[in-house]
Length: 81
Image: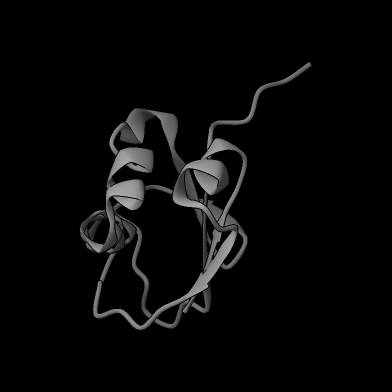
């Protein structure tokens, strides 16, 4: 699965893209796996109130299924301007 990180998440994790294999069934389970990967991941994903997710380019909640997903993107909330 392709993982994409944007904005300060990319900066804190140290990369904008990873390819991983996961058994996670939901975005929430994937995030827990990622937190266990490194201190950088744990720090970046410590406040999920400041993180949004998209699965295959569709905005989703953390309980969204990953069945058949090819890409997950994690990013801060978007603001208007």
